[in-house]
Length: 64
Picture: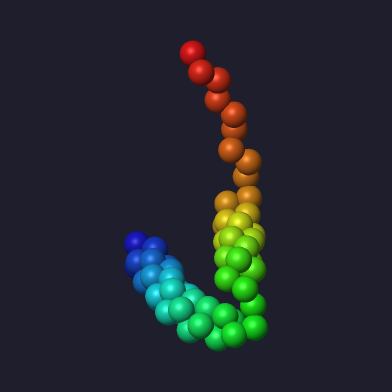
């Protein structure tokens, strides 16, 4: 049980670090890159991270 708690704390710490870095990096990038380019890059990075974390395809369901 202690292992899961430690993993949870590390996940929260990683989220806080990424969340804090995003604001600083966006301000720096806006000098050279358009905001649409930054937005596109953030969505692509998020998509790739989700593919790594959850690589299985979502099964299709049929409406009854």
